[in-house]
Amino acid sequence: MPYRTIKAKKILILLGFIVGLPLLFMAGCKTLTSTIYKSMDCDQFNIDHIELRTGIDVPKIKRKYCQLNGSKRTVEFEVLLNSDELKSYSTKYFNWDAPLFTAEGRRSDTEWQARLDTSTRALIFTIYYLANE
Image (cartoon, rainbow, N blue to C red; front, side, top):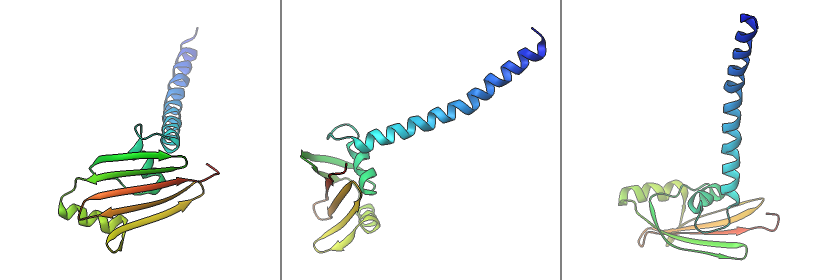
């Protein structure tokens, strides 16, 4: 086989890897995100699932409970932030609705509510999975 043919084959294989590997990586990331979004248990990807559904970053926490009841998930955490971090966090994601900080939202497949009690450090999410899920 001539030298040019061998060199051209090597270049084509190298280009295939250069283009193919990033495409495989992106497809894998998209699949993982979809898996997390659709995860319907309280253990695997629980925090990531909540973050994807609500858009609220869950800080350092200790989980108190998680309950799935039909199309409703309720999760309570204890926030492990210091006072300054907790104040910054509460104003970033929540609105003051005495005596709690609250947030809520809706998308085509999810309706959710979040409450933050800064005195007890309780962070509670209630997620409702709508019928078109």
